Image (cartoon, rainbow, N blue to C red):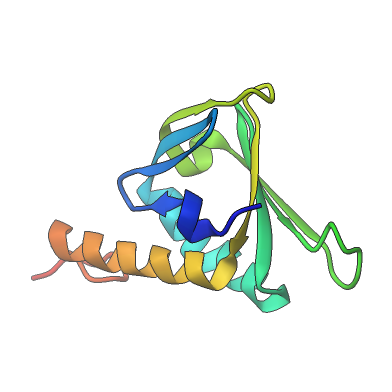
Amino acid sequence: MQRVSDVLSFSKNITELQEKQMKFKAFLTDNGAMLLEKRFLPALDKMGKICHIYLTRDHAFFLHNLLNGDGIQSIAQFRKEALFDDYRISSQNDDRIAFAIDLSLLHRALRSIITIYSEFSGSHSDGAPNL
């Protein structure tokens, strides 16, 4: 598995992963960004630093601590519609892609994206509009 910085470009409007014959492109929805940023990533980050993401045609899975078998294990399964719009995936492995990601880096990137998005959309980071 390669480092996230090598294969993942994560942004509020578009997420794209391209390496060899694997391609993933989707628009992260407002609800998906808030769901990950406020609920799931903080909880997963407390359990450990690395998480595996498994993408299929219909779902995104966040798999935590399944490979070494020590301690708490967690699986978060999301239908693609819960997180993304315009979800496209292709690979030579039946359109499935898996990779490891540093949760603290993903969480920090997501917080930055939400802050930037809220500044451009005229609202505060909590979603309240600027008056």
